[in-house]
Length: 319
Image (cartoon, rainbow, N blue to C red):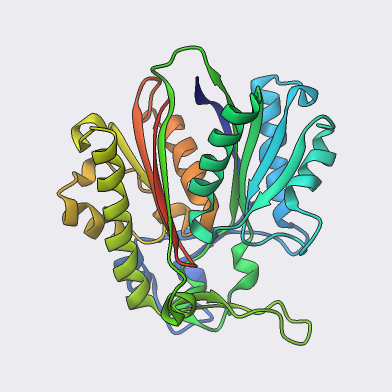
């Protein structure tokens, strides 16, 4: 049995902040940001919008459009780096909000690679535990963890959520074909180049990042993981209709494709309007591509992402 993505819904905060808006308070400009990142604008969560708020809104939208009874859901998995609290989990808050009382719920934290990790976990658990329906949600309010006086980081991020319904596929030709995960935390440099500096005196802290180093690792590791998952499944890039990567930086995506001679025309890019939404970026990009008629039923997709840890991985899915 293969596990299939049967529907997806997303939620973006109402507030949109453009590069020009940021240039009013920072020593930056639209041109400076866009030429380095491909970002034009980002959605910013309101003070009272928590990560669980975004996750619940995306999930309720998914339930409405799929006409799914929450009591038929077996599990809820949320990938997030920005949970409301250390505990309870964001997933438990979603479970209560939608009254999916037969589902067990938990969070997965693998930073920007969280969606790939959660997809692999869901795929494995559904097969081993014979689960019928699983909600996989990626939700982030990462802008609450940026230093808005640091132009090297605050211009990069946005908030959002995506919710997917996963079910067993009747057609064995569709669904999750393969997932592959990696981590490297063996050296201090891997834990310091992209990190959240932790709570200090009640302050939630902020993101720090060595941009050039992150840029290099993102290109190398995502390109490597895509090649390895294709090779292991006797596939080539010609078998893939669309590459949907973590939307961190347009220049990273262009360099990643150049390294492996993958056609950039096959890459879904939404950095211009979403910025980096951490683990939510791939679901947001997929929904956007579906709405615009780029991705269609029967297409084979290649997901890839890298996040702090370092964590990274890829997945091949036929929708």
